[in-house]
Image (cartoon, rainbow, N blue to C red; front, side, top):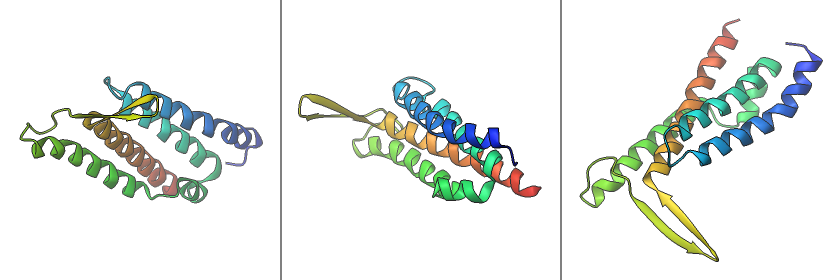
Length: 137
């Protein structure tokens, strides 16, 4: 689409949408919906870019094939479920690791790893669908 307004707005909005996507992800990663809604907003950012500039430029901006994002997301989902099996707990049991770094505590968990997988799968799937719809024309 050759619209100056759309091109300008997209350049301004894509960074804001990606940051908002990450905010939603980290805000909700210990609550329901963090990875899913963050992934939807992130995919929306790339969808807007694809509408404004086409799929070729969007693939360059994304830098990773969407199918690869789906594969990485699925791998993250499987790893988050297998980690508890190592400690003889049921599949997908939540496990946390607390680390101290300076004056702050870092909390790593299998639910966070699961949400990363959901985020990557949602972004990869939606962008794949959008690319295939855009390339049909």
